[in-house]
Length: 458
Image 1 (cartoon, helix red, strand yellow):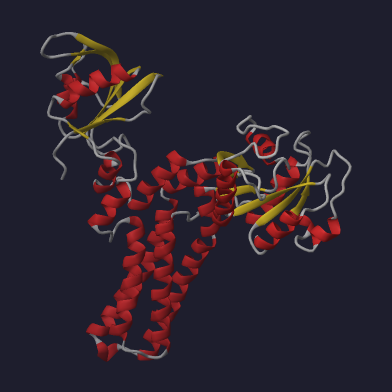
Image 2 (cartoon, rainbow, N blue to C red; image 1 turned 90 degrees about the vertical axis):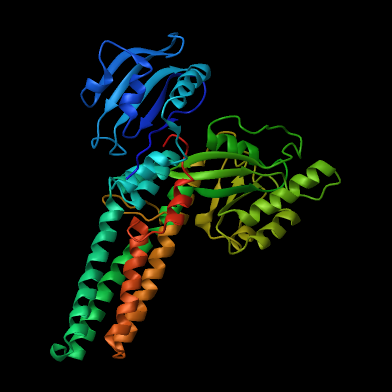
């Protein structure tokens, strides 16, 4: 049981309309009351009520800030402890003065993610739900937000719980047969293990099928925009981002470094990298930019190769197409508003028609075709809808694969009539590996590592 009281700023630091300071712990209400002056005593306030008053320095009796204080009594709070939230004016000085007074009381500064960690340790949420809180905060699209919200609500936890329950039944059956071997029919027990292992493996496979799409929705697609100088790479980034993020001129070599911008296309988050034009150059600075462009190409999940349709294919472009052959890439024939001189037949030797997108970035003609091509390349044209549970966390994916392998071993052992006490080891291992996803069998070091990724006030 946690006995200390913690506090942290829960809103972004900076100028804003309001800022919120969260206090959680057994003494949160009584401690905050020591610096809060109002008509109503906080210790007598009912749960989930808001109170107007002032934060006052107990030593000088100076009014420090005008605030609203919300009281949430245990267990009806995020951490299941007594929680007080202080809403102040959203200035840096205002928040600092209130925090300074709080930390002079019997309250300490919260560690990163400690509020969510307390919610987990107190049984309000499991580990997969806690990790989904991070995804909720970092969501870059409506779809990613919806998926994270479902995980916070326990959709993945429920699926994992069902799979683990089946394994518990299997282990119980094995234990009975170990304790009472005289009643065991070896062939029937082996068939039972194979049947239950298959059921759980099928459930794991269904979750893993969503892993690639889920990971993309969670982390986004790193997309490198590449091509020779002055083909329209920066203009494409500006068009997709709907802002003048990159400088655009008629002078080749304007972009000297990799420029990053996040955009969302058909609910797919893209991390766009506008790269320096790839060409041989004697300019020292531009040369560094070209090297960084080549590195960005090797690291990208998706490559958008921009060509100038009003010019014949250049030797540099043919060489680049050879380099990225076999990678996830789309060719953009830009400047289609000008007379075309590009050899489409030659281009078709490298790319199928559905991955060649004619565009005019200047008139924004063809943007919809590009969005469709990206969507088709990664999601077969559409994202699943309905109640599908996506697995997006790398840790979860790794544990699902380990559990699947353990059950494969159990299935094969049962098929070869290996002694059931040996098979029990693999079944239990799968049960523990699935339990690590929800935190039922997670080590303390793993918990510390996960919650250290949170922001301070969450």
